[in-house]
Image 1: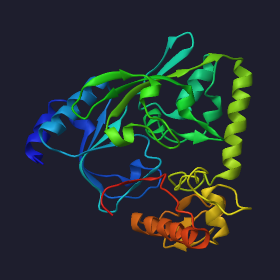
Image 2: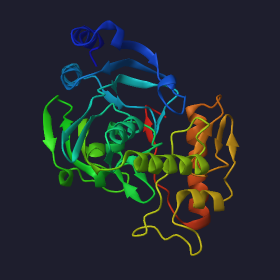
Image 3: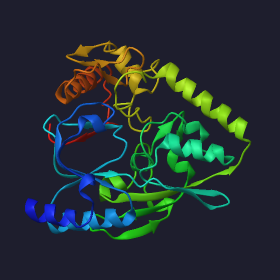
Image 4: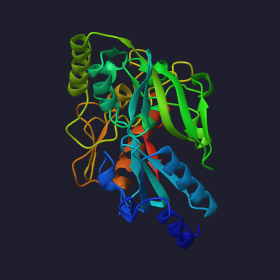
Length: 313
């Protein structure tokens, strides 16, 4: 990693107020834990993203992507290399039945925009944390639906800075999965299918979705969202009488409410680990592994990660 060369290169791409050397990452994540990045940089256009990726490649600097900071756990030791925070935030109606949103747009912001334009199809995603980039990367799911069901097209950037438009059937979407997790490509924008809707009806659906989340999730405390994927009926044998739900399995294993330091398995939803404000990333990770081991021992089910670990643990 050529630090001096990369610092010089990045100075030619971004203004100094968007380049943050040795930046603590805890304030930039919903878990509110984690050490510093060698560099945190804010990019606001596809061209800036392309040039930062090119510079990192030339200088052999590792690249990590960060959107809204949900669904991730950053190590206490931080992240080596450059962390790119995607702040491309434009939304437009690209066709009568399509809305284009850049990667840094929050899902809640996208929902509000579509409702204000009388466009339906995304209102059930109200209350979803994070950004469009993160939602596409992990194929966000809620109440039995995946965000990929609404995707019409995406624009991706390779780690070498090349841009290409990609059709949904090329994205390898599956539960909590997309090709981005394997390819290392970066979402630039996504287009979503929408249709006409009555604004007040759309708002009512959005409010109902948000109310459901508030009733069933610990939204008042710092968390990353669900830490485990739900079991897959095609590959996981969940004992009879227990829902095919990671939260139900952790609960039935007796771990709901379990605490380690400042981290706790939520009393509201056992697939959430929450931070009381004093937790470390190591405490959170240890508590997650405790829950995984308990479910494995009690029920013979191996829970798979939904939360993404960044940095070295």
